[in-house]
Image (tube, rainbow, N blue to C red; front, side):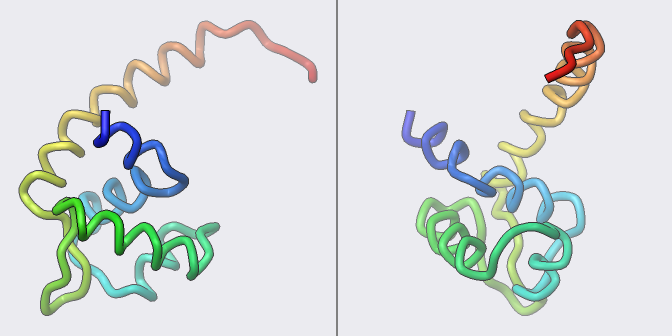
Length: 94
């Protein structure tokens, strides 16, 4: 449950996802790739993800660890399921 709690925090899964997709990058590169994340939230998430062993700091910037990569690979199939689910939702005018 601790992993799901961590990944459920705002932008935590997004940071792991972006780093897995684009590879190692700097703090500024992450800010640009994540678009709407604030520097304060990104800094906090990086601290939490590093403490949990999902992200590391290396020469090229921040990168996912092998376990972070494994989590990403497990989440990728959910995108297909999410797309299918969204397509089946009735149109709603809210």
